[in-house]
Amino acid sequence: MSAVVTYWAEHAWLPHVNGPVVERDVLIAVGPGGRIAKVTPDSGPCPSGAIRLGGLVLPGHANAHSHAFHRALRGNVQVGSGTFWTWRDTMYRFAGALDPDSYLELATAVYAEMALAGITAVGEFHYLHHAPGGVRYDNPNAMGEALIEAALRAGIRITLLDTCYLSSGFGAEPTKPQLRFSDGDADSWAERISELKPAEHARIGAAVHSVRAVPAEQLGTVAHWAVMRKAPLHVHLSEQTAENDACLAAHGVTPTRLLGDHGVLGPRTSVVHATHLTDEDIHLLSDTSTVVCMCPTTERDLADGIGPARRLASSGCPITLGSDSHAVIDPFEEARALELDERLRTRTRGHWTANALLRASTEDGHASLGWSEAGRIEAGSLADFCAVALDTVRTAGPRPALGAEIAVFAASAADVRHVVVGGRHIVRDGVHQLVPDVPKALAEAIAALQ
Ligand SMILES: [Zn+2]
Image 1 (tube, rainbow, N blue to C red):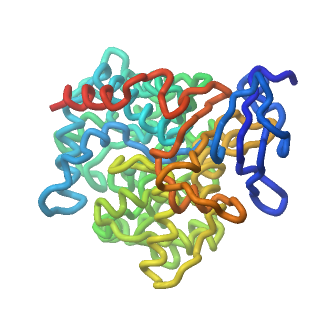
Image 2 (image 1 turned 90 degrees about the horizontal axis):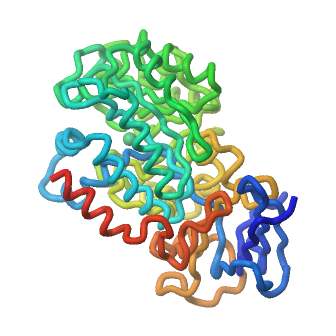
Image 3 (image 1 turned 135 degrees about the vertical axis):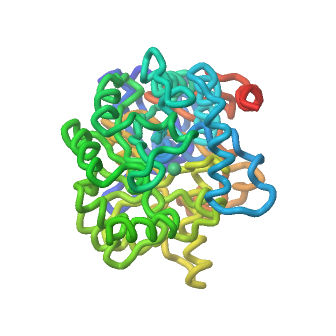
């Protein structure tokens, strides 16, 4: 395979039989179709004709759980007291102001912010389907298609996790703000989502909003849709103890057990948060090889609690990471939070290696979104990667052997200098090549909602 474009990485984090290693002077040749044709470590100085990427090159991060419009809440919800539930009322007010045009503008800016942070694929957990009052747009998928278009404009991949959301709680009618989310029943949801078309940068997956929002007897319809298409299936799970209490009252079982009993769990399923689990829940998730998506910056922002990520991983559940409410968008911060939260809880260090945290943020995240051919810098993989500068105030300093630790435990989104998606150089020297002024785009899109 002949190279279409060749990158040269000062350092790159590469897969190896004994676990990932950081190599020097790595040539990454990208072939047709935006896939990596060849990776050559120790290649010597950057040859003429290759694009030089200084610092440490990592696979692109997968943001496995996003609600793009929550970005509009940043800084607007950090006053006063309250709970997850009072935060949700504010979130509904912003949701009520969006239409397909304004959501396209906002999501383009948010996905561009993600690109600047080194994120090359997003799992958009999308439930804002219809016009206020639940009125159908002429194109009932106008909102979802706006998100797919937004990812294209921002240069990143998207898995649109089109979400079934029918009830305000265990069969009760949706409340007024929730009418925009509901298709009426799961069959109508399946009919609508089946019209969504994938694209080179976009794949379609399914989601159950939660056991609150989809009545138990309709969970199987959503699971069946995903199984038939071998599509990813995501679901919010036990972020709040109130959900567990209500599920026990309604069904006499935990939310995890209810999902298991209706065929929702399995290796193509990601449960999001999984904060408040019983021992039996953890066994059920590991027995079904279910993926667990943690969103640590959101979970701490919303005072959810610390989920049992380490126990789940040790039981065999792949772990992924998402920025969810976008309190911040920083995949390095999400990754190290798994370890740092565990340190606070246990008062001991060393639960996760930097390599394991990076794997959650890259390879396992991509697989959970249906992009199993991305997330590794090796021949045959999609050429999606980012370069973290090692000469900033956060990352500067000599170190005897370079590993992933400096990136995972000290770098921030602001240290990402280059991002490549499908071989295309979408962030160059910290500047987005498709959305030239991302802060301005964010400011204008959010101002339009206020
Ligand atoms: Zn969420």
